[in-house]
Amino acid sequence: MRTFRSFLSQQALVRTASLALPLAAVTVLPACDLFNQVAAAAQNAANISVDETESTNVSLDVSALTGALAGQPAPAPGLPQDLALPPVAVDLNKSQPNIAKYANGHIVTLEINKIAVTPSSNTLTADLPALDIYFGPTTAKTPADGIKVATIPPIKAGSTTAVDATIDAAAMTQAGTKYLSTLAFSQIMDGKLVIATGGMVPGGKVDLKLDLGLHAVVTPL
Image (cartoon, rainbow, N blue to C red; front, top):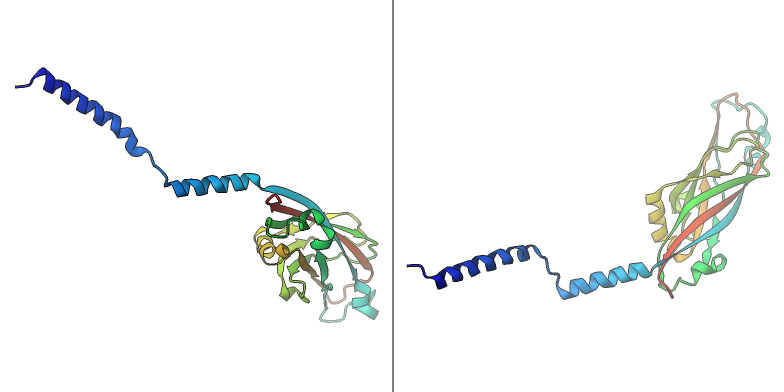
């Protein structure tokens, strides 16, 4: 026989069960995990970006490479000419004080996100073919010592119009970790000039200015 008291007890049990159901969907993080997430978020929020431009200069004397053949038809079977340029030393410790001051463990990431190339004194008698850009350690002597990070598009003979290099983002990240993070590295440029049999062998010289867009993420001092 059901009594009024037992009926009330059953109703209270139903209400308790229904109220408890939503709580089962709530995930409670351990205190230590929650603290770590909060600390990481606070650290990321505190990071700041530093953007600077580093300029380097290289010269390519094609006449010195082709010698007496310049201005003459290329002999069979044609003329492949390597355009390897000597390494250019880059020392951000000296040239970029706004980045160098964070060098003591405060640089989170450092990358080059833009490379603008401006030719000047361009007396080349043929188009300059595409040139690959490599970054390597300060001891690098050849492209094989570094990582190919970008490619400069061909430049017309006599042109002084600036062009942008195409950057390989993944390679730049790798080079940034291995070489740029030390703030001192080598920049090496390499390409190949190919003249078909009977084609005019070029001469002339070009000076190239490279403006490297530096992007650093740092923690405040």
